[in-house]
Length: 199
Image (cartoon, rainbow, N blue to C red; front, side, top):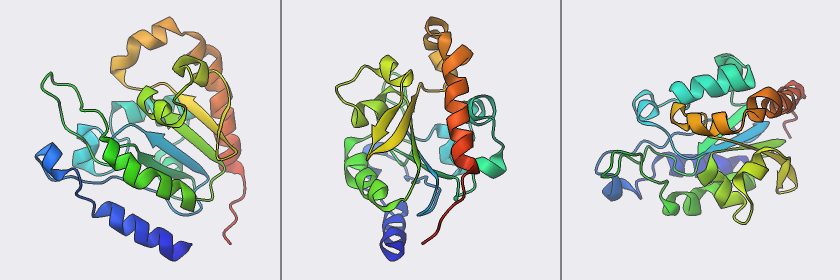
């Protein structure tokens, strides 16, 4: 499995299937290994991440790491802890209205299933409505956030997008910060404390 995984990651990092869609050089962003305890799947890297080539180095990342998870960079970027991927592995650019483009379907159709088949993780974290729609197409997004879900018979936590632009959602759902994030944080930190077994 290790050879297959290494080959997959090499191919993914060289991927250019969206180059003509974007009009700029794509930079696939991915971090983790075969035995990462937590697989985290978001929507797409931001413009900031496109420049730094390191996931979650933007404002959304700061909220996610330091406020929600309460972990430092050494923990978050340790590949034994987190496998960080997204529906779109590259920053997709802006649409004509100045908003980030939707994650190209061809990206997650090509890569995500193959990635998940390889990794021996303990927990999934799905970030944002677009990501949740891929994995739970027939379920209500808000309901997914406030309950425990499962992917491949493993626990899957769904989070709202931590973007500063998502402020209305947080105002409309104060119980997320007052209660649900505390439950989610405990689950994440309990998993991070578990011993990692490499076969």
